[in-house]
Length: 343
Image: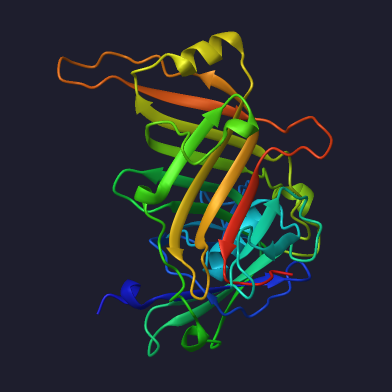
């Protein structure tokens, strides 16, 4: 049997950086390349032979990517999103428009500095079946890069690049207690992208006719020698650099709106939203909304003519900046589901 088909993994949120926490937030994945490397350095010395004979081991490197279908009710999906935004607190409240006693809650995730309660993650990954598998426990993980992507005939996808502190192989198989039944995809059919000149103009009936889009965040984690110390082969700290966002989309070239905004340096606001099924005992649909209050078009995607049978398309790239007003932000995510709190 192909062992990849019965691999399982769970995610937990660490309170202390690098201290492993067994999590039961299961995640179904498309692919997962998280692994440990402990390289060696061959010492090139002048010896009595033309071959080398000495080496030292270098520090551990824990890194890899996970691609998965993002889902608003799946705890692991939200843990990864929270960490991608800097591991800050999640502000939860009854969803707007919910009736008395309803089960819908909204959760606001803002960009933070990896200095709050849950600033790192642990992952328990079973590689193979329960009879012959190995359980890898990764600790001290932070999201270095994260992206949301959407396109025609696909669910909302997420890709995450992780950097970690340590790994061990154990017998701690938590797959029996995992819950992934809540990992329900958000379809492209119930998605929208709105880009307007003001926040007030961002409505469910105002949207761009795009065929795909992608939001990327890079945390620029520092995992070089500055994050290590003599006397240990693991990271001691994992500080973040500047948080950088980029947004792009593909659309048919049937308007010069983007080109005109680029030439004029017009400040825009953006928002994308995906809605899922109506939550049980609620009138509210589960979903995700991401706001970007300060967009500038860097490249309007002036289309190139590729051939006589090609449809002209524009590949538009936005710079995503922080709103300089008081309390302003660069990106804010709002998740709606039936979980009351992520405190």
